[in-house]
Image (cartoon, rainbow, N blue to C red; front, top):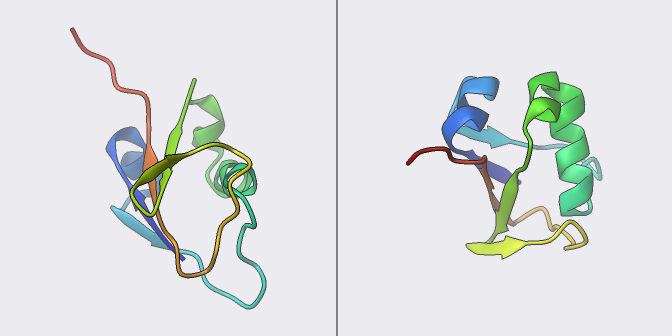
Length: 80
């Protein structure tokens, strides 16, 4: 499972892509992915909101994930 990271999410992880691998250890939903990211990288839990796109479409927390999905983590954007 490949996770693309943008903005502060990339800064937290320290790279632009994160590969989640392993037998049956893949997060099964967007919600579970957010939990795994927060446990692995505690700074994620400090973000006020986090958009997730699965295969180029925004996804709600209940969307199921597959090992072959491309996931993008899009943090909140500020500006004027």
